[in-house]
Image: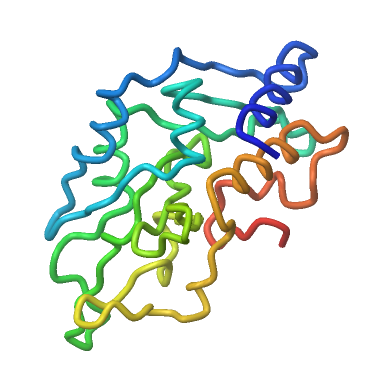
Length: 208
């Protein structure tokens, strides 16, 4: 499904009352550039280019929030694609590790390979991220779910770039477009998917 098609389905769901959407105007060229050049990790650098499917999304909205009430908990589940004015703080607070973090073995860890682009919960602790070190032939990055409270999450070792936990190296989605497609399906389904209520929780995996 294309970015435009996914957004059209979400907007129709908002018109029918299934979801609530808050969305901005398209991102300016400056807003896209701010995303690519404005990140300030606690150490080192993060070099990345907004992938094509994400750019297609930004051509329609700079920020986008979608929420749906979960009947079982009577609470809202949501995702929020953050704007260029929030992406620096998002990554600094919830994604990028400080310098010198290890597990007592002297092997420093880093999450500078990740760039968070969307919040995955109302408590602002879970983030959807690109792994910007793994572009495919089209310049698309895989997407990972990263939770602030996961003790062994998506970190890599600084010394060689290997994953701290190889079991966590498999991406949740191959591209931003695939991620948006999955969110669209989950938030507009006649009956919420089995994992819908778990979105935003530590250790969450789509489809689990």
